[in-house]
Image (cartoon, rainbow, N blue to C red; front, side, top):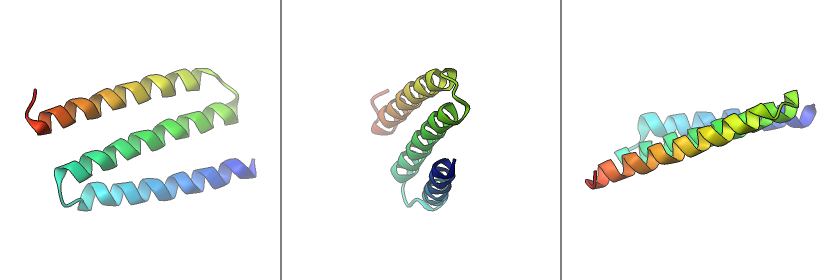
Amino acid sequence: MIGINIYLLIIAIATLLSMYRVFRGPTTVDRVVAVDIMTTITTGLMVLFALYYKRAIFLDVALVYAVLAFLGVIAFARYLEGGV
């Protein structure tokens, strides 16, 4: 139980740091990378919930969420590059 609380604290700190980069990022690319970090953090949070509640469905949801987030970042990167 105490391990999960430490992980949640680390996730909260990482979320705050990436939110700072989203709002204060000097370029659009920095902001996109920060949003990608936040989706990775959310995926990790879903995995922690799966461990805590002992429900495998959260792992499936985390996997689908991670794939969709990856595709979204790739699409946005192509848009910024001008290749869409």
